[in-house]
Image (cartoon, rainbow, N blue to C red; front, side, top):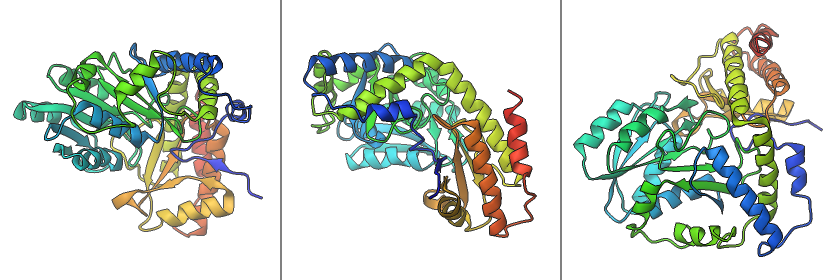
Length: 378
């Protein structure tokens, strides 16, 4: 039986004390006990998002809250800007176009970052733009965008700024209010250290004013329903109670350790991972690497084979490339409940997988030593 090492950019490992909460007897969601739990997580989520506004919890994937942002802000034939640098940036376009929204695309090559100046130029050229959508951490490429700079630009217009922060929140510094983000979305299976199944969304006052004018169809994702029940510390529809109980424990751990410590750990782990990849002579894919996942270029068409060998032979789970990058890169995560020991084990096995594929003359222990050296600078 293989012991598993989960080094994928979602889902990530779940701390035992969080997982055990899901084994407790289930509570009914229309009771005082649940109200107390929901009130606690709602306040905790404000801390995690670094916002004074309400953060709503939904039973869906992160994509669900992406759709929720679009249907609650916009009306048919509205124009938006989507600044995309990877697979998940493209998802904003797909969702918007499915509702008949006109998209002005500011796309860059995968591996590059979104240009704040290009967004500024596009907004000046298109005065009717209602919203700017982009991604904080683009996990398909390992890139991080300059949300703070973009937020300043969008704040000086009538448009709202919407950010997919699904992968970045908790793992990398993100300050919703201070960076003038009007709508931020996230999900449970990454920095929150939970199984998949919950997603989160918050709206600024500027965004709330736009919600009042939205005419797109919606039912399950109608934020007005969630706001009505939020005031009673409830949800409008039956929630995944066990996940919410586990979320309460996860937020407790995050608050005890403090966000700054999570940010610091991920920064250290990202530096160590980059050093490990470079020791294996694997080129880093992202021009501006994020701190929650590292993408590295591998010999042509070997990406899926590397992922498969690691999973089947060593119990190490990493991710391959998505879309047009399939087979060309590997993605190695270092967020949430991933430890120094996990990184070292992952790189030891990666060395063996590459040796087995005869990609190059791998010097055994070189990558592990590079990771160790960086980790113990701390």
